Length: 245
Image 1 (spheres, rainbow, N blue to C red):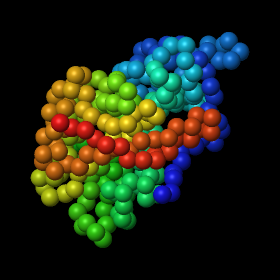
Image 2 (tube, helix red, strand yellow):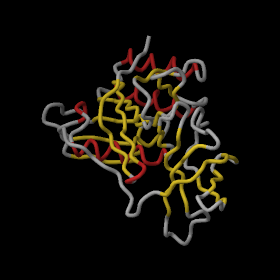
Image 3 (tube, helix red, strand yellow):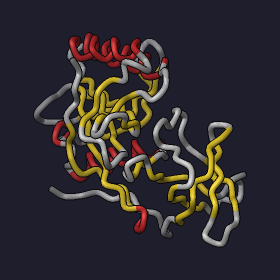
Image 4 (spheres, one colour):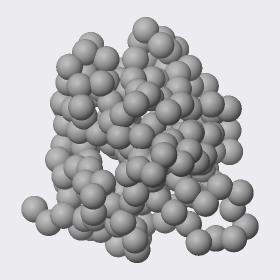
């Protein structure tokens, strides 16, 4: 199997995580003792991902228009595992993995488009795949980033109540009803997760919608990333089981 890598032009920098606040900001301490503020590109709760006094890694942008030049990328979770918390990277990881043939379920498509408006609720599908010789149906792919681990190996989604996530499942079900193919892909950016299941204790409505979607014919798959902060690499490497009772 070939691999795909998401790398920065310059290495990520290590720091000590201090605290997350106002949702999109994180304070860290550098090796010289200086405290700086990073942008935290994650709309979820980041439950079990914010562990003060642990090592984290951040990237730096040269865009002069940015208020915060630095972006939190990877954190150390309880148990010493790594988690990629920049949810904006998930779609790029998946796109590169599709192109490299890593995701077996999504091979053979000649057209891959991102952020296509679709559905009655006017969503934007993460990927619309078309042109496969083995399946003439357009394939709608929704990507969700998974970073919550509760029990050892147990990956959960979502990490907070997600009305948006339920909306996307409704849209995928509608695509299946119209005769199209629909796939929910969990992009697992956590090195300790061994399987993925719905977080019924956090959002039971999402769990119900996920089970309804499966019964309707929506395909649900999960792929895990290898995370190497020293080289600024995140790579989708293997399929994980999805457990839904």
